[in-house]
Image (cartoon, rainbow, N blue to C red; front, side, top):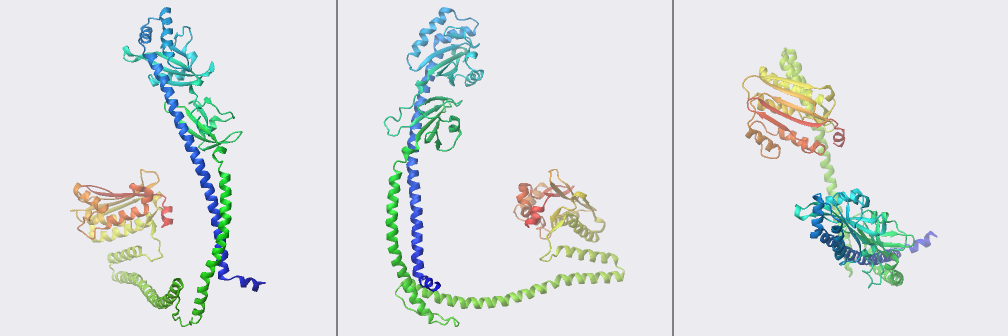
Length: 589
């Protein structure tokens, strides 16, 4: 059974089956993608049509609102209305015949626009002077609508459906008195019939019948020709372009009116946008079957063309001796097979070269390991030599030099780290190293050097990169104490920062200090400028500054830096802050 299957497990059959499977997958994916893209294109075109309808509806709505706004503005600015409200403002109530005269004026304006149910005029104390009854404005509308009208200072405010007549939409605007420097004179209320806002005839010439829904700022439906039940609040709050009603799904496009705060929603049934999808599906199936049959034939021919020259090449390569790694010589008219033979010969040459390189690298690695083992002896020899100096000086009674040799030995042991030694230490260990350095410098400078180290118990276990404080102390002695005539003092202070969760480390000296020019040069050097030191290498401060940036820059940002303050004749203070919790930086390091 296995032998029979092995006969069919040839390269030609594998290529043939592989090509067929790939083609089937490609056709399947291409069909799905094409179907999805065309369906999406139909949907996009429908959405563009709906969006255009929404824009047109919004433009028409703005035109209608502009008409209402113009009508109310004309009534508000009418000289007779202005004079009547100005008298009311001056404590001169309008008489009956004056109020009756408003009927003719308002009717003349109202006749210019269809859809106006009525116009109402009120005084500043909410009393209605037209029509002639005793109704109050605050009984007619909510107090917040009146406040909105006052805030708009003469612009029209739409309040929504009339509580007494749901078929009417109301709006209010404040009347400003022109002869009293636009002082508040009263209010005008306009009541418009809902039919005035009908926008559904915009697509009468199109085959697709869109449903247009007009909703005011409070979420109430102003006009709609949608016969199905619809959750308006869910429609307005949804970001989806398709909504599901009780009957069928709809594509929805929303347009917001800046003039009124109302929202226009244009809805089109999804079924009307996908009428051509069934035809597309049939066309894709037929073209897919035709493609499969055609590719079966092409795959068989192509697999035969590929495997026949390879079989010839295999026969030619069998004549080569694998153990000797000699190049193979074969002549073929097929460019790819000829190149394949050249690549085989290049591989043989390259393999021989790599074998020689590996041999040479192994020899070099052995020599490098031997030098590394020898280099480990050097620090050990240095420490043993210093220990021998110590015992020799101890025997001769030179205790001061013996202490200095011990301090130097411990100083070197702290500085010289093995590759496996931790580069992070506690602040207590770092300050112990600083103390050894100060004692050595005290032997050198004698009474000219005084020093103190203050470390709070809470900060002793905080971890810090090695050799972050000692260079600052060295700088204070080199540029501060040695440049001072008479005794000098160096102070190292470690405590809590004013910023919560941080440690403040400060090195002070009472040396000659620096003027503003030199201080700015030092700060410039820390930020990448030229070094300004004329003693030593001048890289101590720069090294500490850069290491702070590398270790703590991601945590502290701009706060991660050396802060230097100096005053001529009083000394210099160098300080920096690090996080109290350095476990994240220490672990990543």
